[in-house]
Image (cartoon, rainbow, N blue to C red; front, side, top):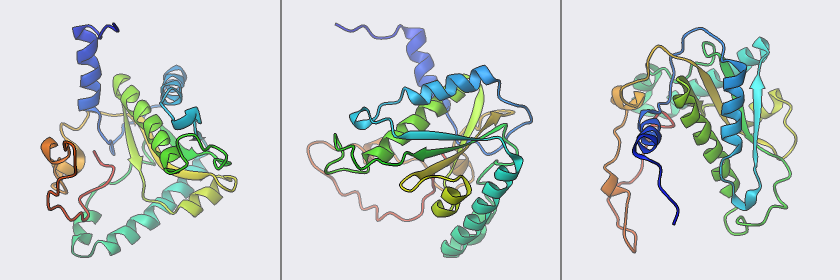
Length: 226
């Protein structure tokens, strides 16, 4: 029978899960190359449907490209605010990215030529996106273990980022990731601290045998800011 981790190892894994934060505030300093290599390797060991490994990581080292990416995000930030109606002013007060301050800026993308990969995707083609999300989470948890903050930015025009980075037809940017040193990790998710949304009670998300309608009609309760 497979053996579980010992108590200290188990506690470390759960600590990384519970203390992971979507960070927006960074302090100056580069990420050491050996640490960055470990984070990339953690991402590359994520599970993927059909073992297709659809993630591609674009490291942004050119300051002009970083500035151009930031401009794309800023345009979408304004458009998102306008779409939020009565919550517009509340949204505009939020710090939604740290792209100009973080030590490393990464773009996580879906690979091109994914269509031939049928295993696990015949009825659920979006499983390639789920696989990329797993790679991002692996990197996020590894970053927390290394004492680094990471923030997921999803406010951008997909075609604009694709064009800026010269992605081939069929490839698609999924996330802009801010990675770097932080003064401290938020004690709670930032959007919870800012009273934008609250974590749902676990029992409203776990069902048995069949779906139970909890009366939640959706709405804009936040984003990746957990």
